[in-house]
Image 1 (tube, rainbow, N blue to C red):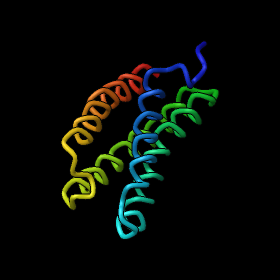
Image 2: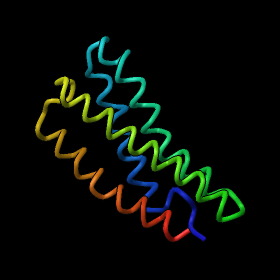
Image 3: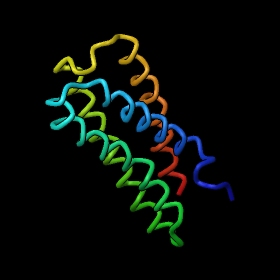
Amino acid sequence: MKCVYELDVYKLAEELSDMIWYDFDTWTVKAQKTIGYQIIRSSDSIAANIAEGYGRHSSADRKKFYYYSRGSFEETKSWLRKAIRKKIIFSTEKMEKYKNIIDKLGPKLNAFINNT
């Protein structure tokens, strides 16, 4: 069995949370204190729940945490939409990078859950 950090779905989740973590430093204090801390928490939770589920014994237990991960993924997308709408994230290049990760992570996460 692979280690959790070797899984593509986990790597994508980490890539998304790392990108958000580093972008946070460029935001205004207002953006950091409102959307920033929320999106860091939700994006970190995606990979954390994959890891926690991966370490569980039963498939029902694993699946429960993978569902939590998907919930955190949806929450993160919501915060990203807000950040774009409020011009916190305004670079076309950044938006495209986020979109690319999200477009890969969503289907991989759903497939991961369905294969559990």
